[in-house]
Image (tube, rainbow, N blue to C red; front, side, top):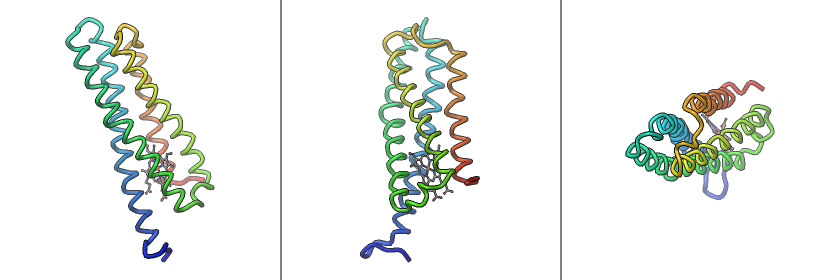
Length: 154
Ligand code: HEM
């Protein structure tokens, strides 16, 4: 069994994996719900000030207190695992996953930018239809990323 002093590396690895999976679930819940709120914001926030206020608050809290911290923990725990098992970093599936994760991070940061725009002026948000298409981006990335880690096809 691989160990460092009296710390069992395998147990440590599983701890990071547990944290990684929990954080990924929270990140995905946050990003998928945030895009949904932005769709409502674009549809209703322009004409109804009370809905605009409520959605702005919900979006800000969801982004700041759930989505971004969860994304940070997911990435950190993932990198810790690669640090503990560097051979993973040399696999093809991991390289592909890494690229898709970078796009997912950009999609998350873009949702943050959109919620700032919405808070200032919901009239400047993209139309609900465009946001519905955008909402598919994190969904498709999540499906592909989880397929890569589970099937490890190359
Ligand atoms: C920079 C970001 C990330 C890094 C460095 C990273 C790294 C890793 C590593 C090293 C593992 C362990 C693989 C194994 O033991 O076989 C893992 C597992 C996993 N990752 Fe990530 N990951 C990242 C982001 C993500 C994202 C964004 C998702 C989902 C959308 C995700 C989903 C998963 C899942 C579901 C597992 C468990 C796979 C299994 O146990 O079979 N990861 N990740």
